[in-house]
Amino acid sequence: MILSRIKPAVNAGTKPKDSSKDRLSLEEFLSKRDYTGALTVLQFKGQNEETVRWVGYCSFHIGDHKNAMSIYEKMLQSKSVPEDTVTNLACCYFFLGMYTNAQKILEKAVESRLKTRLQFHLAHKLGEEEQLMQYHQQLADIIEDQLSLASIHYLRSHYQEAIDIYKRVLLDNREYIALNVYVALCYYKLDYYDVSQEVLGVYLTKYPDSAIAINLKSCNHFRLYNGKAAEHELKTLVDQTSPSFSFGHDLIRHNLVVFRGGDKALQVLPPLVDVIPEARLNLVIYHLKQNEYQEAHELIKNLEPTVPQEYILKGVVNISYGQETGLVKFFIFSSLFPGFLLRSSVLPKLRCKIIPFFVGIFLTVKLQ
Image (cartoon, rainbow, N blue to C red; front, top):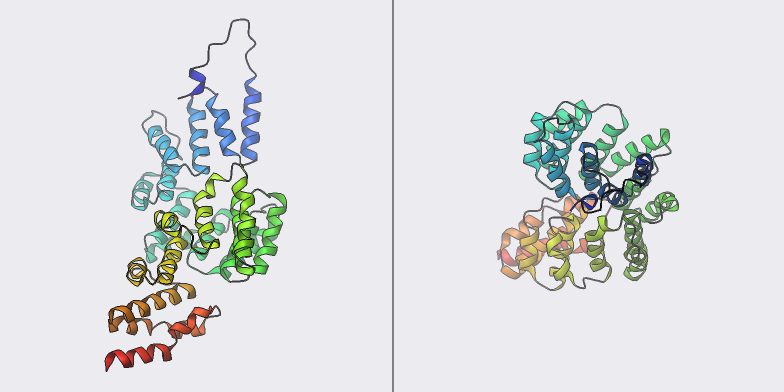
């Protein structure tokens, strides 16, 4: 319900509220990235075309993509449709995982840099390599396009390439301090946790309540120290009520399970398997620790490994499942991994379970 509709009409003798002050207040919330506060202001404003567009914008930025989608779909039914509405709706579809819908509706969108970037990401999500390269060539040497390219590098586990782009952009745009978080995340993925922590500190000094940054800091503490230290860092985020908190709620619940050694894994992780990529892997690890090899195998059998940890985990699952079921094909499948792992710079202790000699022993036993 629009709150302004249930308020009494202004008395004739009451001085109308200065709308410019409302405007300034909205701009202040937006400048602080407080989209929840901005939505509160918008609820008290009259419902007009401009207000509706701002509600859609703010809803999108707080992660309420369904509401934003609903708004943009209704806007398409109006007589005068802003030309960016179709592209904005496609962005909502993208974040809701409706990739085919996004791709289809983009055919009606006017040409723009945003449209090209979205098509670039859709090609990656849909595994269309030829189109991916086509849109890659259309990217310009502008900040938005370069950051889009960096994100694709990150998603494809090309972390150093992503770092190079972020650092190049930062060199000429020191005010883009949030890029330090992206750099820190790449270093985290490369197992340089101390470097990640140092880079992350630049952003946290200015924005100490950032949900994403605090979460990454806690993950660094988990890798550098232990789960207790990590949970202590995350507690500051759980206790706060900043506008950024709700955005990372699922991520926080997921990480608390990890920090606590798998406590409540079966309650928290299954619904997050298709939301947070690491949730699937951590649920697999939980099942392995419980000697539930069938469940672990079902979760990981369709995963195509791209990084050492995924190769290792899938190899361990196949060996464990193969040993339990006596199916030789899983041992043969696992024997393909060690060559990659031994050339890798990241070799956790778990690697010992899938070295060729280990696999060879089981092959000999099972094939006799």
